[in-house]
Structure formats: C-alpha cells, structure tokens
Amino acid sequence: MTGDDICHLSVARLGELYRKRKLSPLEVVDAHLTRISRLNPTLNAYVLVTAETAIEAAREAEHRFASGASDELPPLYGIPFSVKDTLQTAGVTTTFGSPLFRDVVPREDAAVVAAVKRAGGILLGKTNTPALGWMAVTQNKLFKPTLNPWNPALTPGGSSGGAAVAASAALAPVNIGTDGGGSLRVPASFTGTVGFKPTHGLVPNYPTGNNWSLQHIGPIARTVEDAAFALDAMVVADHRDPYSWAPALKSLSFAGAIRRSPAPMKILFCPDPGYAESIDPEVVAVCRKAMPAFRELGHAVTEHTLDWTSPMEIWQTLFVAGVANRLGDLARESPELIEDTLLGFVAQGQRLAPDAYYRAWLARNDWWQQVCATFQDYDLVITPTVACAPFAIGKETAGTIAGKAVSFYGWTPFSAPFNLSGQPAISLPAGFNRDGLPIGLQIVGRRFDDELVLAVASSFEKIRPWPTRAPDRFV
Image 1 (cartoon, rainbow, N blue to C red):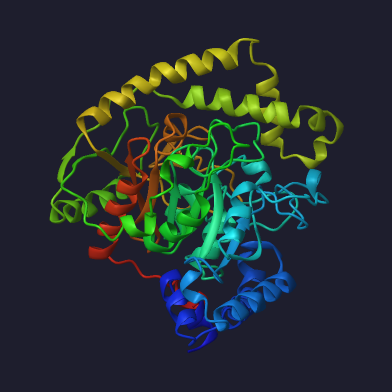
Image 2: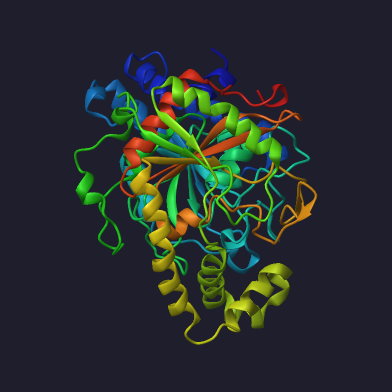
C-alpha cells in the first residue's frame, strides 16, 4: 500500500487496520505529512503544519495500540485531523486569516479541538480561511489563496475552504470547520466533499465569538461516514458554552445512526426558496436528477418553490454588527491590514441604528415561523447547496449568476437561512455540471434531527457513490 493509498483510507478502515496491527498511526501521519509537503505548496489548504507534535502524538498512539488495549480506544484514536485557523489551538499560532492576528498563540484549545484530541485525534495543522471567516471564498491578506483541486483556477469556496480542500485532496480524513452562513456547506459543494452543519449548540462553541448566534462548528470529510465518526468525537458537553445541549445526547452514536435505514420520509425538494436573486439552471438540473434516488429509498418527494420572505437582511444585520464589534477599533488603527470590502461591512455595522440588532432578533423570531410551518408538513427539505458552480479564484463573490447580477452574498441563498434557524444541514455531492465541476445538494432537517439528516445522506451516498479521489493531478 502506497502512502497516497493510505491517505485515501476511511476513518473506519484506518481504525480496523490499527486494531489488526496491519498499519500504524505513525505510518498514517507520515503518509499525510508527505502528501501535504507535495501538494500543499500548490493548493495551500494548510497555512501551518504541526509535523513534530503530530509525529510525537502518532508514536504515543502506536504505543497504545501495541499495548493490547485497542478495544478500549475510541474510533478516532490515531486519526489525523486539521483545524480551521479561526479556531484556537493551544501553543499553535491562530491567525484568524488576518495580519492583525499573525502572532497570536492561544494558551488553550477551542472546546471542539480539545474534544477531538481527547478522542485520540492527531492534529496535523491549521487550514486556510478568509479573515475571521467573513466571506465564502478562501483568500486573505496574510496567506496565498486556497485553490480548488478540481480546477486550480477556481475557488474552493469558503470560509472553511482550506478544510474542504484538505478533505478533497486527501490531506486529512477529518477536518474541523465553522459555518456562520454556509462556510462548511459552500466549500463542500465546490470541492465534492461532505460538510455537515449540526444543530446550533450540538458542538460546543467556546471561546464564543461575536457572531456566536450564527456560528455552527462541524466536520468536512470525503464521506458521510467519516463526517459521522468525526461528529461523535466533537459532540461533548461543555458548560462554558451557555447554548450547548450535548448532555441530552450522551447515549447517541452518529456513526451508528448512519448504519440504520431511515423510515420513509416526506421530503420537499425546493429548487428556489422564493427570494433567491438568481440560480444557475444547471445547478438545479443536477440536483433534480438526484431526486429519484430518494424515491428509490422509499421516500415521498415533492417539488415546489417556497414563498418564504427573504431572511438575508436579518442575517446581514446580525453579521455586520458582529464584525463591527470585533474590528471597529482595529479598522481605525490599521485599516491597511483589512480587506476593503470587509472595512465596508465594519462601517455598515457601525452605521446601524441603536436598536437595529434587537429588531433583527425580533424579525429572526418572526421569520422562523415560516420555516416551522414548512417542517410541519415535511420531515426534510432538500435544496441545491449553492446557487452557482465554482467561479474564478481571486473573486470575492460570484458577481453574476445565469447572466444576472447578484449582491455580495446573493449566491448563497440556500445556506445562510439555516444559520438563522439553527437547523442541521449537510451538503453532499449530487453530480457534475457540464464542465466536470462538483455540484452539491443540501439536506436540512428539523432542529435536533441530526441523526436523521446524516442517516438519509448516508443512504443516498450508498446508492449514488461519489469518487473519493479528486482529479488525477491530485491523487
């Protein structure tokens, strides 16, 4: 087995080979570090690689497996993982993708990082992000942009773009990202990977950021199964996050849930939420072609456009208020270190009326009633993940879709709403467009129905298998 073959093994297969003593964590970490050294100079998924500590942790894991206690070790034990550079890591630089924080070395891990380490995960390094995760592509003033393995001239999306590319190019089997408006699901769609945004509060969010009410933490992986194994390690009770509800799930296993066949569901396929500025017809066509698979699985699928009012102004008010709070003083002191468009969002947040943030929360509560009504009629809603295919590297936004100009966040109408509602949502590959680029579909469930969303996604993946290797240049 070559090093590249090792890097493409699933989490379950790696654990099986560890326990049979046919493969060691040290071999696996070495294979990933070798692959990173070869591919990362081009792709720039990682902005920092923790090679020495990863090798040290791999030696310790190898010793544990050799001691004969392998049956007692959790499934993620000895499995390499990456962390988005907006999540702090003890003793490891955390730049938040900005020159403003280039020298920040936290004293403690983010709660989710600590949880995965306790489960035996081995940190390989930090992955690229736009500054503070402010946009849905992955470029910043500190590092080179991250490139899409399917076509390096195109963006992988963002803001967890480095994590998605690490998954797509087999630079880590487990990758931790964040999602405040689509930041796990957009890059998953653009890179042919699986990005899961759990119900808000399922994965602890500590330290709490300025956009805490929008941010979800979750995994990006090559398969639903790998994402489920990762989630099992990430879901822990942490009372430092006042919105954590993980204690209610002490006995659940997400990896176990995907092995069960879900009962027949009522599914709505929604090609348009009713407020989208423009949607690429080819994206809709690719997702529509996936719907027969759900019917094959026994589900009742209905298609229609929703008539929801747009929540995008609510989302943007909450977002820019948080950005202005975080960067307001820094924007006055060091504007040259902040992207011009981001400076504009800071200014927009500073111009908000004193009660705008409060009114946005009230509007958010009212808007939720539309979502709630839809999910009284349907168990799941399926949409395209993104309104367009991957676009050119260097652009901050799609600009136009199907010949029509769209606003800065106008190409993500399917993702941001479910940050407002806090629901679980997964993006997984639906197929390719005519240019051979991945197109993702999104499955959304009721709050707390994370197991169901993963189980249905896994069932779909099994009858519509997706290549787990990116194009030949990156195998």
